[in-house]
Image 1: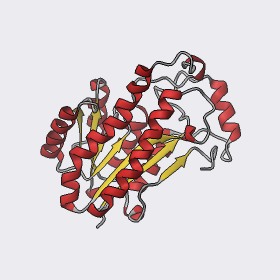
Image 2: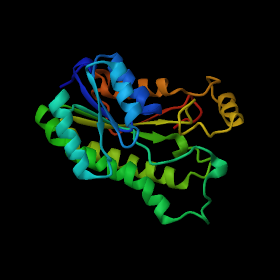
Image 3: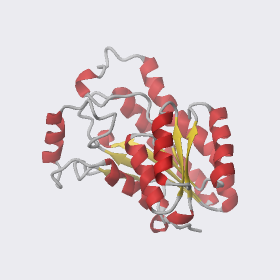
Amino acid sequence: MTLPLSEQTVIVTGAARGLGAAIAMAFAREGAKVAINYRNSREQAEALAESLGERAHAFQADIRDGAAVTEMLTDVTRRLGPPTTVVHNALADFSFNGDARLKLGELSWEAMTAQLDTAVKGALNLIQATRPAMAAAGFGRVVTIGTNLFQNPVVPYHDYTAAKGALLALTRTAAAELGPDGITVNMVSGGLLRTTDASAATPEAVFDLIAGSTPLRRVTTPEEAADAVLFFASPWARAVTGQNLIVDGGLVFG
């Protein structure tokens, strides 16, 4: 079974800003109903929902809290209908500035778990909450957001990269279990994006270096990464699951 994007109801976590907002806008552009999840950025989330029209609404929930995710799902279903698609984009507080990141000798386990709680626990909460309705419909799409630092760990983002690596493992094991229910699970891994709140602290020289190192000679934008997310949700990806698609202008060949 497949559904066109225009008939999907999509939850995008961490969608008030940056890549999440670009993903929400991309789905809305294709006619989908969009649930804009946020944790703290209420003003931005509500402004985005208003700009996207009546088929979009903002929903507050800390995805690390399973009960809050279940409550959000109930609210989304009431307002927009049962979710068919989940994009797990939410990011724990993080700044993409390699010079400011902790080296291994300074890194605490608490810093690691802060990333794991959002990336992996958040994904688990979302999958557990949305699976019953997706399985009943015989259709579901889950897209997680990873990183090209798996292949190219050039900066000491130990906590962030480790959490995203664990999320990739969960993406693949979930794909294996959920496939018989008609649910696909895939990951989109971007590189540094130009520009989001998280990458605003990145020195301009780093952007220029990355641009010069890619075959396309430019830094990928949030809008370009969002289009790859649409692919995994679209009918064209109906036979694709458990995959990690790198979207970084060819900087990394995975």
